[in-house]
Image 1: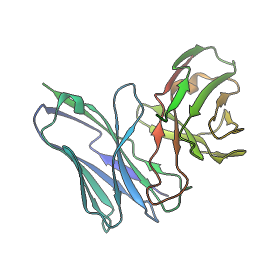
Image 2: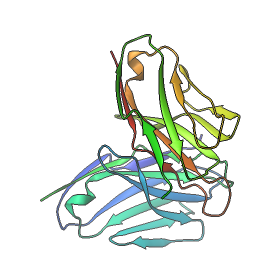
Image 3: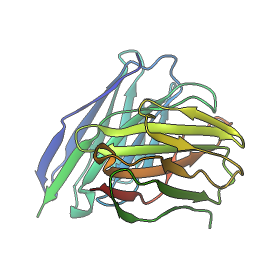
Image 4: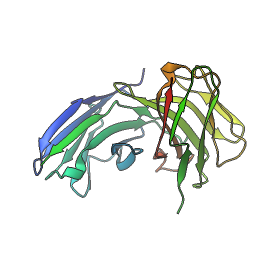
Length: 113
Length: 115
């Protein structure tokens, strides 16, 4: 069964600090992995997409990594800001436009001033 | 700008009543999805559609139905609302082809309370 596991479930950090969120998956075949950010009371929004051949991709202070061999991804947030407080969801898709993506349960991040 | 909108954003209903949540997208996407989000479960797929007249059941489809009569809309109906269906519902859409497929565009959510 395709699964996506995220850790930690929740995380509290101080503003300005860095943090790393983890995502392990068993989805096969694999096409891409996306990290979504979901602010409280809003729908998720895509932060970055990682395909099989990509190891690292940055989007501002967000850097995602992918190890397709071990089926692990991480999302690193540098110099956190209060606006980073949100849920971060890892979503893995197989090939083809009609493949149903598999969702992780998300990591809830709280950034304190 | 293209967008995806849900209505109503908030609804309170009683057990046994029929409820319909609307979802309208202007992206011209073929794929549309309905999810529910509950604490401890994350987003779970209820129903999805790959195009007009196509509908499919997701992992938590019992008690829900959808219909797709045009590209833009995928209404979600709760035939007889139950307290277990109290949740936040998200509609999403995506392109059906291309290497960059998979990005889901979500609505803002509909919070449903069943008393």
